[in-house]
Length: 170
Ligand SMILES: Cc1cc2nc3c(=O)[nH]c(=O)nc-3n(C[C@H](O)[C@H](O)[C@H](O)COP(=O)(O)O)c2cc1C
Image (cartoon, rainbow, N blue to C red; front, side):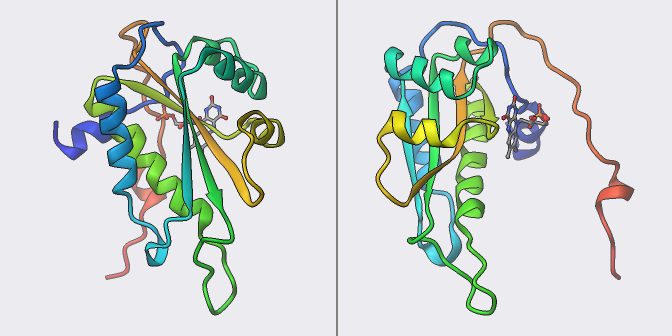
């Protein structure tokens, strides 16, 4: 697949097959995450890879949706704000940007391996931090459901038009 194929094929999968994701695929996903760039290469991210069914059920309580209960695994992308680059001029914290880039690598790599995924940010972050026993200063920023699709349904992408999105300054 070309990069464009991957970008077109990725969508938020909200209906998973119970089939577990093979360890080799998980390893490859994690390597793609590891290679993501970050501001000043500070790499303020840490990822919790959850396949344990008891922990998964507890994570599902942090985002109580029937579809999420079908996911065979979840990666919780966390950031450490103290480790992140803060822009000198105004102190802007780049943690969320760094985590988002890594999660984008993850979701695109998943498509490349025949897997689906879905970002989840609308979760109870405090509860999630307790479930994972996160150290002080580590914030769960996104949960990412990952697995095989239960059906071959592919939703249409709704996006802004080119004119709405791009401003040329020639
Ligand atoms: C930062 C971010 C947070 C998101 N949080 C959620 C979420 O909490 N629950 C959910 O079902 N989808 C969530 N999504 C998925 C978006 O709804 C989805 O990406 C968007 O509607 C575009 O659809 P597509 O991913 O299928 O192309 C999130 C996506 C992003 C990028």
